[in-house]
Structures are given as C-alpha cells and as structure tokens.
Image (cartoon, rainbow, N blue to C red; front, side, top):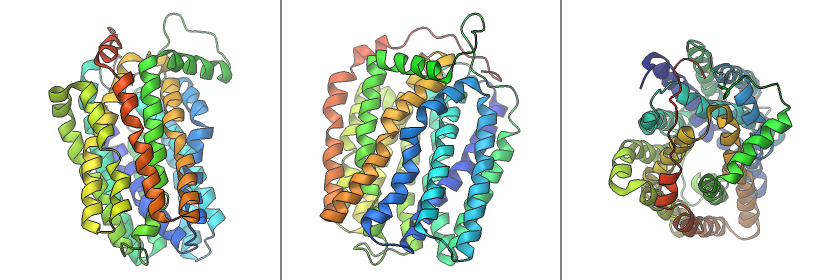
Length: 416
C-alpha cells in the first residue's frame, strides 16, 4: 500500500456513503410498505432503483475515464444529499406516494452508477503495487460491507422504528460526511492515457472502445455473464423478500428486526473479507470462484423452504461469507489487467452485463409473486443461481486465469 493517507480517507468516505446506502436498504422498503403491500407495485421501487445500471452504466464508465474520479464521487454524494433532503421533508409531512419513491430510487440509482464506477476505477491510483490489490480490496470491502449491510440496515431499522423521516435523514447526514471526506483526498485522478495524449473523441467512440475490450476478453466476459445471472437470481428473491419478512408476513419481523436480519448478510460478508485472502491462497482463484457460486443458491433457497428467522439468517451469513470472495478476486483481476485509460469503461461494461439484470430480476420477482406466491419467487431465484456453476466450471479455468495476468506497470499514487 503506498499512499496510506489518501487510502485511509477513501476508507472513511466509503464507510460514510455506504452507511447511508445501508440505512436506505431498510428505510425505503419500510416507507413503501406504508403505501402498498401489492407485490408487483412494491417490487417496482426496487426495479426502478436498479434500472440506471441498465440504462446509464456505459455513459458512467466513459465519464469515469474522462473526468477526475474523486471529483465525480464528491458531486454524486452532494446530489444524494439534495434528493434525500427533499424526501426527508416529504416523509415528515406524511405526503409520500409510490411515484415519489420511484423517482428518488431512480435518482439514487443514477448516482450509484457514477459513484461506484469511479470508485472502482480510482483504487489502483492509490495502490502502487498491483499484487496488493486483493489486500486493498479486502479492506475496502470490509469497511463498505460493515457500513452498508451491517451497521446501516440495523441503524436504519432502529431509527425508522421511531420515525421514518428520521431514518431518511440519517442517510442524508451520512452522505454529507462522505462528500466532505472525499474532498480531503489529495491529487488528481484522471485516467492516464497510453502514449501521447489522444485527441478528444466522442462519448460514443469511448463507449465502443471499452465494450470492444470487454467483448474480446473471454475470461472477463464469462465472469460478467455469471454475475449477471447471479444478480438476476438474487433480485428475483430480494425484491419481494420484505413482504415475506416484515409483519404481517410469515416471518413476522418488526422494522428493527428486519434491519437486524439484513445485518446478518453484512456479518457474513465482513467475515468473508477476512477469510478471502486465506481462501484464495489455499484453494486458488478458480476453486474460490467455484465455491462462491456453488453456495449462491442458498440465499434464495432459505426463505423458500422455511420462515424461521434463525434459518434464514444463518443461510444469509454463510452465502454472504463465501460469496464476497468472488468480488475480491474478480475486481482485483480487472484492476490489474485492464489499462488505466480503459478501466472506467471496462468496469462499466462489465457492470452493465453484471448489474443490468437487477431490474429484470426485480420485475421477475414481482410478477412471479403476484401470479403465484412469494415462495415461488424464491424458488425461481434459487433455480437461476444454479445456472452459474457450470459456466464457471467450463469458462473460468486456471489456465485462463494465469494467462490473463500480464506484466502491468504500477500506477503512481496521487494521480490517475
């Protein structure tokens, strides 16, 4: 790790922004539950919030390679503050409606495409040695997941149990803190061109260049498809899961209890970030990835077979603990092998395939739950998850993983 001061500030900013995201995971469904309990209408909020990954991921990647990545993250956090500040006032007045939640979810989703693409692309600029990216990503994921899925959901549920508006306001304040800390990171973080500075090209040509790289890289392409199927499955389940979990649903949880259940996912994920380096060393990247996808169906299978809080929480912990190793291996690989001037666009193209399926999963979950049942949606999610295993087995081989690792020139800290 080279520029420890900047890296520590990035960790703090990530913690604040992801604390806000995590609180919203609990608060937004609770606000929606106060408006409707129709599965189709309820799932619409999740669908709309994930839609920007399908619509705007590619332009977000092009912007990440054109603009200063730190500045982009600051601007996005500032925009989130404005959007949630307005929603806080609306909820406090008791005037919230479903279309308003959808509008807020869409705006936050647009910000997420820009923020997350810039964030993944900025990390190699803060880590001089490419072989230490797994360690850096493990620490980043540990902080992110602790805030996003452990502290955030639990805090959001507890505060929202007192007042929904206060729950939304908690996220607003956390985004303010994230933006302020990001502003203290020193240096410039524009993408580094290869060779002479190229002439300015159109956004369209920039996007095509990134997609061409991804499409031509067999290993990255296969990984993106696998994550796309996995996210399709997970969102088929999770889009309607609050209806199953929160009273009067079968699990009978309160608002605070729902937040604590979501925290079980983070508990597993945080455990996984500490275990991942050891797992990768012991099993190797290929078997680590196979294990992650082999355990994946458990997330949807658990609520499909039982409404026991203990069973569902335990399943969430295990699937999250094993699954996080997939992210650490694959994100670190992309950061090492993709040229810096293409990294934002390749990350965005990867996430278009990997995350663009999330609104489709939310829509599928809503349809299946409306026409059949909530448990049918969970079984659908589990079945889709199983499809990932044969793809990883056939496409993500040890030979291809080794061949993908060229000699990469380290990126100097403090600039990009």
